[in-house]
Image (cartoon, rainbow over all chains, first blue to last red; front, side, top):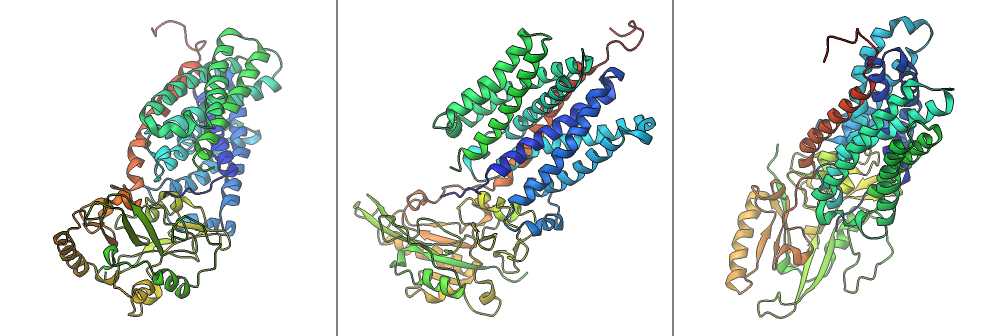
Length: 274
Length: 262
């Protein structure tokens, strides 16, 4: 009897890129604030990566509307209990932070590094919000599978952080020559995020119980277990521990984490709508 | 605020003529749709973007007073909930509550994000591809603001659908349940009449002859937004953990004099 919203690939991609943007910015802000000069490239890549992604997020959201020209109607109200309303505002505010932080990495602003770090600390909170509110948005619907596990937001946040770190590490690995101390630190942080994501995912499935059926059994199950749990979480963790320091394996692990992050959003959004 | 208006649908009086469904289509100028074969007289299977009133036909074994098969009819409609999930979900303010307590979607404001569609506990709100907006029963907003009842209630030949002030209809409905129980319909019950019950009460409430689940209605529908606070707090918890992990990884061990801190 319940109706699903017919959200398709554009929303899946939005959830995915929003997670990466929030995670990359947060990684950059932490690196900028506590990483010291050796992590400066992490901060640069993270800030700069979040900017095009959050712009893409906004475009995807607008394109998915039934009447895209009315997208500014989202700004008519601000409802604190409504994830969709807060989210629309957050994309804009986070975009602003992302823009300012990116600009402040260059030229005449370079000497204002202290200010940039402060801004990063505040923008980081909006990054966390962007990465996690999409999960809370799904849980505030009438759909049992979306609403009965209390950890959808927590899961999206951990996944957003780990995919954001994976994207940053991949860019560092592909662009930086020689050994990069920042890269090792991102990899290290990503390992924590993936472990947190695995634990949250297990708790999430336990809380959902039989409501988890759309992803744990049925025809989305192979994608969920094989694509997300095995290839997207367990294999990259093993690669990180076993292939210590080897660049190609590290890059492969990062790619797998990104693929897993996409599959997570895909199976959650699509499994009850097809 | 004006006195709350309501629709009371007494399913025990419904003869399944679907005059309400037709009247709704005509008054609201809702488009024609491909019929759907549901195996019964019911058409369509669910509410659509052009079907706001829908007569449901249910064959329920053992639900008649004599324990035989019961043929249950119910003219279903948007419930105009006091705690409306669609209204809370709407990010544009297109969905609003009128001074009569009904819930309406402003078609000139809705931008078609479709969040309300997944937030309705009854699957009422539907997306219209042509207008790009969400649509549902308006409680004939134009009619009730001009002293007329909704088209469906006006068309109903058996007074199965009644329109009026909510408090008056609720007391009338209570008496009707007593009458039906005395006649042997032991499962006769009101659905959504109680303002202390689920969703703060429904402004379109029903008299059912069997359990709500027999009519494919949820026994205890909940406001979807109830999850927001707990889920947000758990997300913050997850953010703290991830943040601590990153701090641990990025902390610059080379800085400082190497002593002092354990």
